Image (tube, rainbow, N blue to C red):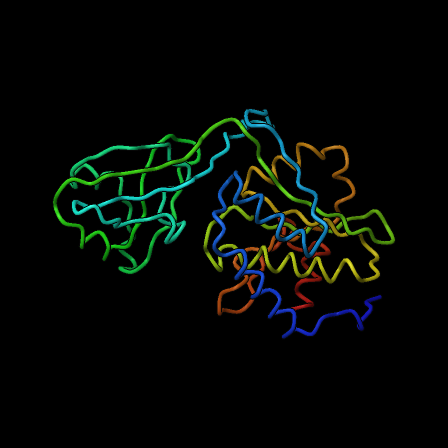
Length: 278
């Protein structure tokens, strides 16, 4: 039975989700690193997340966990010395997992390391190079077109070294040990819909579930895409039989109607539950 007195007002819950997104927005999240940890610790103020860390290089099924990446600063200075691109202005500006660089080079050579998206002249694209060593900057097409000829200085003060893959999980115990797994990926930087919306939704939902009487147990899992769930599965193979249902919250902040991807069976209990709810 649902304890309706503990079910939040939809508008109030929406305000909480939005406020959390505003706090998380500026943090430099990536596949690994301190920005991801800081984000998970902030979420843990709402729901009791345990941070689990697995060393770089660990063999997880047929994957080898990547090295940890952290950035102190990254920028491009133009011929006049003024910075024309700066990671501090937007953490989308840097190709994620860029190797450290300090160099000077002409515009023609620099352009080989610049990434734009011609589908939106004002948009800064989000790009990564997790498993191939490279460096680069992302900027809008308008920014690129304003760059004058001349020599540019490039600084990427970053570390790419052995560290850890981090995810956060919380178990909200119900009357039974049967679990509903609620998962989302928290590795993207300042992207509101993809996927701060999923992180904030799961966090606030977890806050309310933690104060309700539950029949099933609920397990919340927040971490980097792909390698986060894989690492959790690798660590928890012996207890997977407890997971009876699962949902992934992704891109839940756009203005369109709800979208649900059915299970492989198409008629599982969770499929029927979602169909009823929608």
